[in-house]
Length: 460
Image 1 (tube, one colour):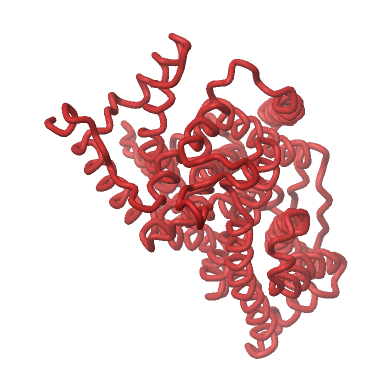
Image 2 (cartoon, rainbow, N blue to C red):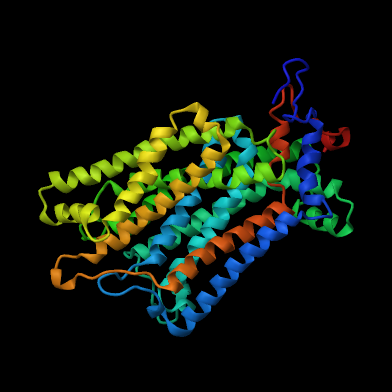
């Protein structure tokens, strides 16, 4: 926040000038004493990751029969979780790339850990296509590698589209995240008192010296990567939606899925940003950097994308009637009032009723506890949306003789909650050993801020 009296950047409630920003952020990484709270969370998350390893080990030994998939529900938690995790990663790309191109300075305080969230969420999502195919040791067949028998992947399969979309998304995201950290890694290198830390951060900072040449190339690379990443926000989840839209199954064969999936992904992604940002700002006392304005702006973006999602739900219900297709009409009725109709109303309450009636209020949008609650509600609702699309649509197919039910097994739940633990482990390691807030970008927001290299560096 800018102090109107002095024009200096001050951390709210602490009276510190902008010079303390670097110390505040770097101290989190360079401190020799890790907070006990971090160890407590890491232990819990590590237990979840261990549960994932147990579930995957048993899966590889016994096969996918340990899950609840059957006829007619050939897809289950694996696809639900895959789509949910991919959606969570969208907010990081949106905050980092699109808001950068539009020069929205408020994004700087949350962009770094949102990018990290994207990478870790995509890693969790990538597990599920790998393990649900039944023979994960042959997963390399999905890539267009030349074989001696001239056997090539089936490029008309949506599974192949997922491989290309997700791998491209992951590659661009991790490069963008890493390039943005280089100046801050050099800062950690210079401030560290440990020889090992100096060597580590010096190696991954790629010889950054802060010269004009470095800054010009850094800004050029950031803009180019942002331009490459921006179309991915639309393309990746559009491709994921094609997994369903290209099928002939009622409720899936619809053109509303691509925009609905993209809006839903951004919706759940921003909810996850809140889920992470609110505890972080409290635990590390970052209220002066991640301010109420950030929470308020995220609430506004969630309000916009929430209305797009609500419109998509309305179109689905309307087309079930307007199409005059018996199968579509029955599916709509079954989703609402069938044996699993409760799941539909849970998603309507979580994604539409609760958020869209409360996020209009700025008072509620700046209420930290309430926004944390909303973030949990929306992420629950978005998972439930995928459950309705996948499970409820498959339980009652064209033939009543083929109807069935679905009840997840303990291995389904262990795999899902295990990925949450795995995600949390990765995020905690990131927070502990890498700068979670871009020090350089925060400083560049100050009035009159500019690059001031040393004379020798300028001559370079």
